[in-house]
Length: 235
Image (tube, rainbow, N blue to C red; front, top):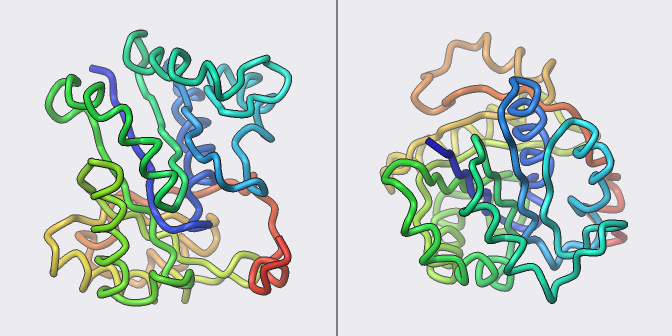
């Protein structure tokens, strides 16, 4: 059965990085993999900047900018239809982290509804160091807003807490504590904890409850960003 994973979450929470990693790991395992880039807002960390890398790894891409492939926003709907019509093993939707991004997903609500039960997952990517994600109250508020605009319910949280170039295992520990309370309050499970391999391994040896860790995913870094610029709005 085709698996569809939708990645939503706050702006710059790490959705595209996770999408790139999930797609690369899937294709490396011989699975027919498609990535659909619905992030039309973020000009800095675009999926389209990595199209050559993805195609070299036998990953198909649908992107609103799709550099060098002649695909524009005017024919995006027809291109996105391939996610539902063709025989993929895994389809990943990378959705912009604001109202506009969520609304771009909502237009495909009926297509998602037609998929077999259990084949569509919606993951809320959480970095507790981003604004509007520092506490359970803020995470749940943003989650509700994105769900309303996207017409899709979150089925799992992903702890992707980091400080970019200043990241450490302590970031994942702080994310774990906050998402544990968030998960208990709303009933949505933590399905993945993600991070650079050395920090993830250090975090995992602590022996925390696997219920609030999910399946760990060690990330390769594809999106190269400066935390100083990121923090002060320079990028």
